[in-house]
Length: 183
Image 1 (cartoon, rainbow, N blue to C red):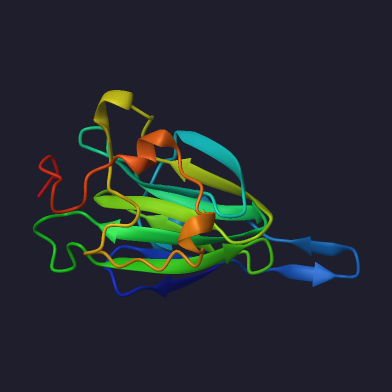
Image 2: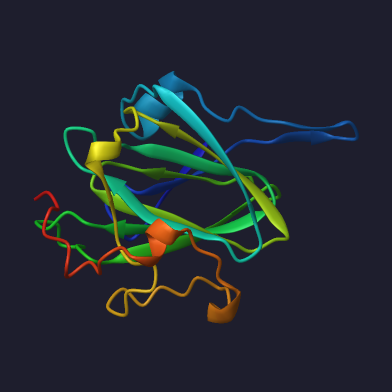
């Protein structure tokens, strides 16, 4: 695998080594040993999958300590724009975001350490997203940031009138209104 650094410390893109021939392809999606050597030591305890249609925006979600989660995300079907926002108040990149297109064609994965809000928009007719987490979901520690926070200025690459949101995602505060973030 090749590890590609981003503009935000700790957030990396993982490009797998793909073995393709006339039968199809094969790649190792995750190897704990290689990940520990090239990114950081981690032990994933939960794996989730979400299927969504075009225009769905999920996020921006996070979990607060002591239930914060690191995630390794990838798309097994379709295309998404994956977005990560630094919510660590003491970080030099606090409030900054990166966006990476993940698809079943590019096979890229994105590693998101603790201290980040995460979301994505679906760019294909349908997409299946898979993500590993290093901590269990804890509803009482759940938080979120409004997907269209003007200060963040995220281009979700979906027309506003085509965006499909959950009721919860429609009512999250802006980043500036979040009082419960960790340092």
